[in-house]
Length: 187
Image (cartoon, rainbow, N blue to C red; front, side, top):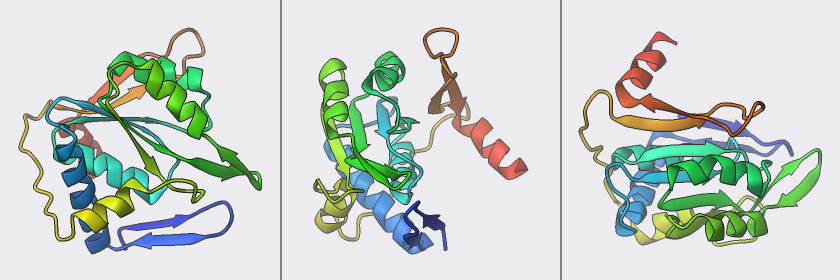
């Protein structure tokens, strides 16, 4: 298994390496069709679910830069972060469950999309079954897609993460592809 995920409600989800590769390739094809390429930014407003890994890998495979924050952030928290990096695509969940309650974030995601002029496309990941899922749609539209990763320099940006923002606006922290690979090997 490549990914084993257990949601708060106890629902267990798994992805084999083959399923992960297929989903990554399909979403990569969708992203490329939307004009995402080397150096572009893709923002994920997603919880820790398999779809987040798929979106990050699809982004990285094109040489684009991935950034994310949790959907429990309000629109202002997401704007403070994503507004700094000018993403071309926002991929967001329709909502999430926490403490036994369902939280719909569609309106907040639309607010963020409308407020950041660089966002050309809003894609959805369906966790509450309220929207058409971009990854499922990509798999249906791009069966057998391949996902060759673009070769880039060691220091090419891979992720943008953020400081906590407790003492002011969150600061961007850029992690390069080579350094991230070395860190993963160390761990």
